[in-house]
Image (cartoon, rainbow, N blue to C red):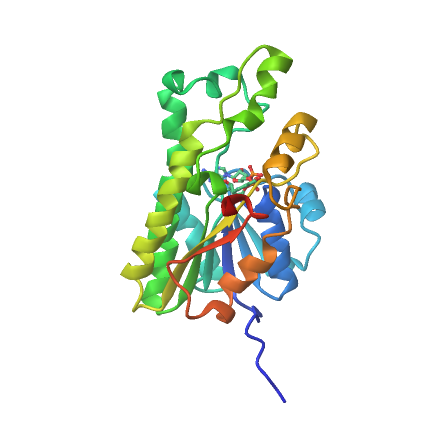
Length: 274
Ligand SMILES: NC(=O)c1ccc[n+]([C@@H]2O[C@H](COP(=O)([O-])OP(=O)(O)OC[C@H]3O[C@@H](n4cnc5c(N)ncnc54)[C@H](O)[C@@H]3O)[C@@H](O)[C@H]2O)c1
């Protein structure tokens, strides 16, 4: 029997924001591997040699667009570049985001009462306003075509409050407490109803809007104490590898999820299950 592959992404045009980062790069490589054409929107684009090394793929299937997602004109210029080369995107992955790692300086990871207003604004600007602008400009173009899939990238810390005890070792180790900041959590949380809003707004226009929720990814640069504490809280007992959200992304990008909109696809090792 000749059955159509519902996960097929051949020649789909996909914009992935922040795809020079850890998870976004994996998204881009997976999509390209499946025959999609991927436009990488990143604030800073490194030189050719670095790009070749990070993306050893068919050069006809990837373009790098220097886009600051917090600037509407910049997002529009990026879209124009994609449209001129390939046409209006079928998929938008709003992956670019700002987070605060445990290695962050004390002025951005201190008590809530002293959390700097400018950092709050900066994080909301990228995580919320940047997603809003990409949806307005690129999602808007997809709606005019009457088709498309928008995938916002959330976080378990946008669904639940962080377990601050995980970071308590920092005070013992360095003498300076680390508080997982409010800005990341509040900005990510806003994306959940933003997703539902747009899903209903574009419900009859052929554009689906969903959110994918990852949990923490293992990085070699993380403190061992952080990794141990995190894994103890995690039902599956380990952190995610950077490519473990790819399957969910392919599902949301493809026709396999064609009746799904306004949903939250949680891929978190069980973190939100208790
Ligand atoms: N890594 C994790 O453990 C984890 C867990 C849950 C959710 N997430 C979410 O997944 C997404 C990707 O995370 P990551 O760890 O790969 O991030 P990362 O920091 O490795 O990469 C983020 C990328 O976004 C780009 N970027 C930042 N501001 C931008 C702007 N204004 N315009 C264009 N590009 C900009 C950065 O240059 C970078 O390339 C983020 O939304 C993050 O919140 C990550």
